[in-house]
Length: 165
Image (tube, rainbow, N blue to C red; front, side, top):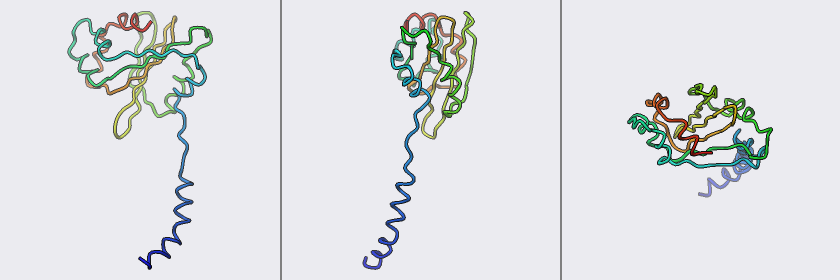
């Protein structure tokens, strides 16, 4: 033990400098920056039981797709802000580490896009609904089974939209 003491005393300052120098402040995500820019943004939470209501045709693949989704957080525009835009989020999401999974046009010439950010332990999903009447961001808490992603075509989007308004 006495032989290790001089080695420890010699290495301690270097370990301290290394430990404090490697401390990096967590950068804000693009969504956190967006929320800071629009503090009056409204959030709604849709849980799996409600998401299942969009499966009006009883498609088993849709249920498999959302099996591990706990909830979806919907970020609705501030009610009094006519300047609200989601472009700052949608244009910066790739720089935040997200990759686009899909983008589809809705019947009313809107656009829905779904993005994923992969990590070793899980995936983070985020998406956008961009229509003439509303710009909505949504974040999925849980996992999607991407083998069944085509089941989204069978979902009744109008039912979900009625629930979040």
